[in-house]
Image 1: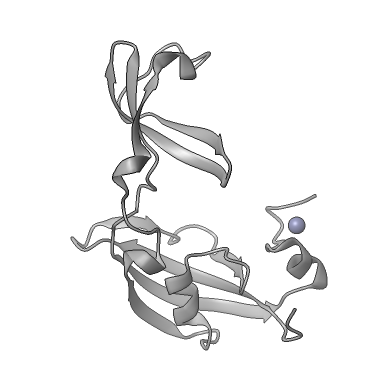
Image 2 (image 1 turned 30 degrees about the vertical axis):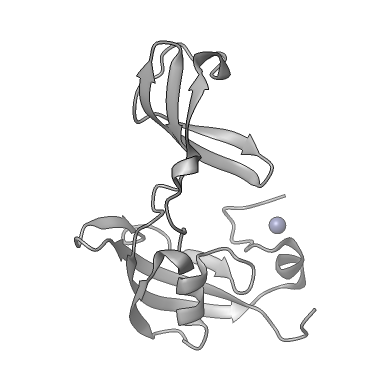
Length: 159
Ligand code: ZN
């Protein structure tokens, strides 16, 4: 365990893809707060921001390996309709949360063929190069409790 202090960093960001389409943005919302070193955000973005201070801004492009990884064909599978117990209607594009050994995963329905449902468990941004335009709003030292929990306590989060 390192003794170095960990920072809570607040950023405004706009995320675009290779085509220049805006995929996500904090503009008009509260800034995004993350705890450095706690894997709260993708590594390629966190690494680019480690030496920045409040008021700094940066444009950074992140390869899939440093973002949400590559797409994997084996994560596209046919599962029986019965796996969706309690869901009346299953349509392409619907998203579900699935419990897996590595945590909760979002799966998307690709197509429905009778009793077979084709699902895609790739992250929606897997395989994408991501372009971030970031402004550092503020930084502060994380509390011991935040470091212990591995996330920021910013008022929207309580225990
Ligand atoms: Zn907590």
